[in-house]
Length: 231
Image 1 (cartoon, rainbow, N blue to C red):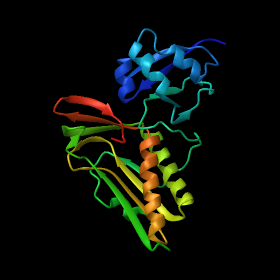
Image 2: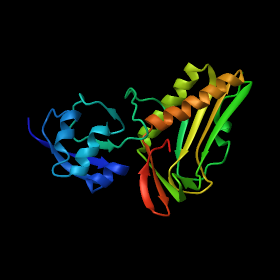
Image 3: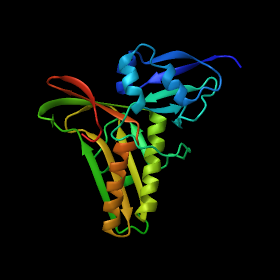
Image 4: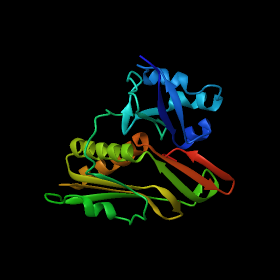
């Protein structure tokens, strides 16, 4: 078997550590994700420091350290979101989630949930605030691995339906440049009774901040930095 070249693309803080958006890496045949982690850094100490906390995706789904990197596949290096919890890489149809680069209206997700049999719709709306850690925030920029983000948001919404006996759920997340007061995420959960819809809505936002490959860059009066989605 011969060596081959794979494209590696970096996101958010991993891109800063790598010093590039993407690069071509010579990868021996049968190389696993775990072995790729050893190949990538070279003499880049910042990348070496961050790689153990990064998740890896191959093409448009998550990969595990044991997975072999196929010839010609694009490899994505995804820095931590908030906690970095993972899920099965099984693909699903993205029916309960949307990733957009346009303004999102408060309550927009509630228009997307099935209300047949529902006696309650609970919503959560996350907006950009003007302060963080004692500093004045000027604006936020969100970046995502779009196909993975939509799949994972759909998985989370579907899990919420099953875990909390919901009728339906939907989540919309915005990426790109957001000003103070603009909506970053809008979530809706419908259920027969209010307790279930409240619980479902909370489950979605908490899991989203832990698992979905969306990163937030915060610009304040002192500069810019990638920050935890939980911040």
